[in-house]
Structures are given as structure tokens and as C-alpha cells.
Amino acid sequence: MVRKKSRLDIDEKEAITVRLIYELYASGKGYKAIVGYLNKNGYQTKLNNSFSVAQLRTILMNPVYVGKVRFNVRRDWNEKRRHNINPNPIVVDGIHVAIISDELWEKVQFMISQKAGKPTRIYDGEYPLTGILKCPVCGAGMVISRVTAKRKDGSKRRLIYYACGNWKNKGTAVCRSNMVRVETSNEFVYQQLNKILSNDKFFQEVMYRVNREHNITQENANKDRGVQYIC
Image 1: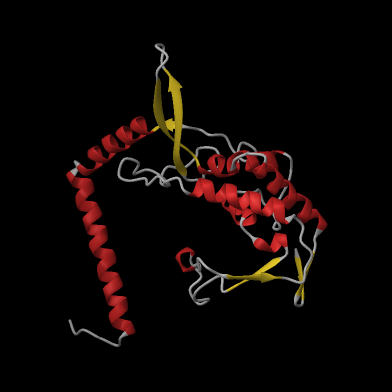
Image 2: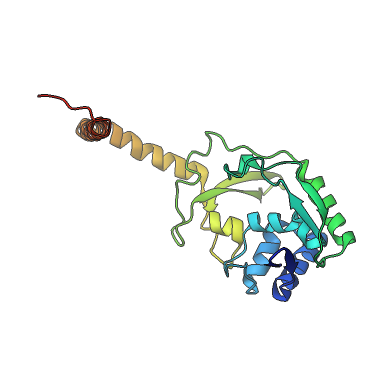
């Protein structure tokens, strides 16, 4: 959609992509599968970037595509953060043409609501390197990825890896998984930290630098307040 003064006009190229996204989701494909398909086939966002899962969710829940307009999306426009989103915005009929049908919109919203009932996983201290480890190929933060493996006796076990965040969010068109086992990564980092922290000389150097930075910061703050000390 392109805004012209107070009216929204259709950008046909964007409309084709939006319709495809809704149709793929309605057919049962998940966020990541759709993102992977879009990025592999050269579809791009308004800013000519690769699609991500977060962008896909936004598109699938935006009533503008079904001819509606939202008001009061945020509680306070001076505080533009995620927790500031109004859970009950005002939605009214717009004067622009819808690019997806009411039936398709309702079906997609129902499917999203059904999946939203599933509990969200909370990553705690078991995965302390999430976001800290970087993908060796693209440099994105590594995130948690779970894989189900089959044992020889037919039973299944869940393996947990750190994987490229770009791969997880945007698919193989952007990067590979570059997965590494959580246990292996954690153990290696803990061992290295233990070696470093056990080195008295290194520890003393760190404390010296921390104290020096603190003193410099304090001196600058005192200067800003007009406080002077006589030595």
C-alpha cells in the first residue's frame, strides 16, 4: 500500500507478495517455510531487504490489507517500544481497496489465534551464549534450535544446538544453520573463562582498568557539575 495524503493506494507489486503470503499461510505452511520460500525466490520487503519471521507476522496481522484502518496502535507515541503496543486498537473500515478477501483474512486470523495458545519457550540459564555466539559465516547472533534425532532402537531424543539467527529467522536463502551443540559450546566457553579468571595477573589487570575507567567517568561527571577538587 502507498499512502497519498489521506488515502492508501495499491502498490501492485507489494499486493502480489502480500496475497502470496496469506495464501501460503492459509495452506498450512509455517512462518519459517514461507520466509524461506520468499527469500529463495527473490521476493523483497519495501526496503528491498530479505523477509524475516517478525515481518511476516506483522503482515499477516495487519488489517490494512483487508480494507481496514487501525488507530491507537500505541498507548503513548513518545514511547515506541514493543511493550507499548495497545492490545486493543481501534479498527474501522478504510476508504482504500482491500487486496485480500474477508474469508482469507478470517481464516488466517483463526489459524494464528489457534497457534498463539501454545506456550512460548523461555530460554534461561541453560543457554547463556544465545545472542553472544556469532555465526562464523554472516556474523548474526546464534539462537537456540531443537532437532529430534532417532536412536537405533527407534526411540527419539531431543538435541539442542546454537544456530545462526539469520538462518533461523530468514531461511537458507540468507545463511546456513552452522549449528553447534549447546553442551559442547557451553563447556568450551566455561573452560576458557575458568582459565582466564584463574590467572591472577589477568584478573589484576582487569580490575585496574575497571577502576581507571570508573575514576575517569567520575572526574568527567564532576566537571560537568562544576565540581573541582584541590589536590
